[in-house]
Length: 572
Image (cartoon, rainbow, N blue to C red; front, side):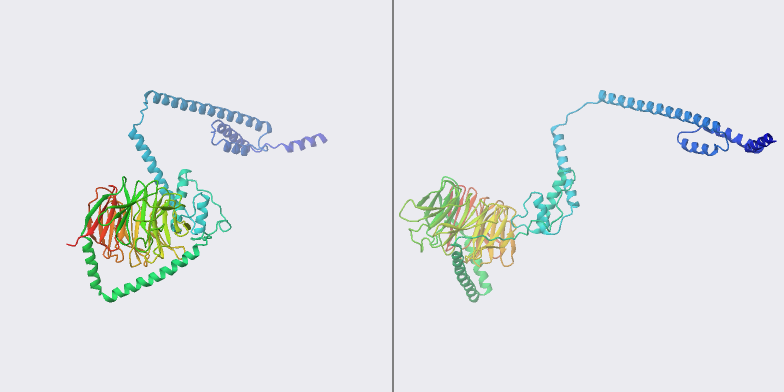
């Protein structure tokens, strides 16, 4: 009984199910085997999971389940091996095809060297592309708006933070171009700048700076103040008196008459004055003498109007650029004075000359200090001081009595050439080789106004006798008229076809203006209407200088043809 009970208990754990369930499991097993034969690589994982969902241990015995897994793994390894072999064959075919194409190109390709024109065209194309890239980079650059930050960026790029007369807007555009240039050279990479601007050590620079001057500076400025105030009062009184005596129409008639007489200038004398070019000439205050500065280093003084040589000035070792008479020379200054004339030249020296009429050779005193050629000299109206401009980018303020430099004024970024003294002696104008003009207050030493407009060298300048008009000429062939009260240029005249080398207002009245140029011409202009009055052509080469006598009867011009010409108003 016990054995029968045990057998019955064991039989209760084995359950084969009904016939329908057995038949259903057989059909599922056959479908599973057929699916394993056609399974693909892309659905292999899914097929395995589906198969495993059907093959549960509670439905099949363990041996059948393991056998099925081994068969499936073998099938998968076969499929992977077949695909690997197929992929290797495809790669070998691609490599062989590329090698065949390269061999074909090597056999049928001929290298032709570019011509010089083609190379030049390629270079031009590269330059144009670089320019285009630079322009495109300019539009993408974001710049700081504070001027202090702009200066810091410029310093980090290794460039000057300030140029002479440079405005903040101009400085900002300069930074933009420098950054764009950096990006072009570094494949579009922006330069790295420091972030902390406020805490930096770059301080806002003042437009002006002060330095300790010599002991002679303060008395000199006081003398200039005293003289200029008296001269200004006298000038204004004369202008008021003239306006009270003459009606506006009468004043216009007087200007027309003066220009008509100036149009009758005729050559009355001509003289070879040097073995080289003649740089400049100047009349004495009494209209009896005319001095010339020669390219050989020799200056000469001539009698007027017969153009005979009076004496020569030997001292400079190279070209003399300018010569000027002292304001009181020949009328109030003694002949033994060492400051009757002043000359300057290529040798970087300024010479002050005696003028003893009975002696053939004159003595001179040398003023040294400039580090490059000296271009212009000009006496102060009070006769105590001398001013000079130089290619060393400075102008100097000299004390004639002590023969020392009182002020060495910086401020120009290029060589200083043109210079003009205000009629009152209060203001000095200087123009440089970069087209920058500046007005300096001699009483305070400050730069009071910048006159920018010329695009090239400023070579000449002169003040109108009214004290507020200024005329300048330069290498851009233009004649510019400035109004100091309005602080701008009121008229631009294309005066000559070549550079304007010199100009001169009529002394005292300033009713007409004379200009000379490298186009070999001398022109007379109406100073009120800026109209051309007369064109004089007698020189055979470039005209370098012009001056008008105090009585306006004579005009003298110098030129490259080694001679000067004396002009006189016709009385006909």
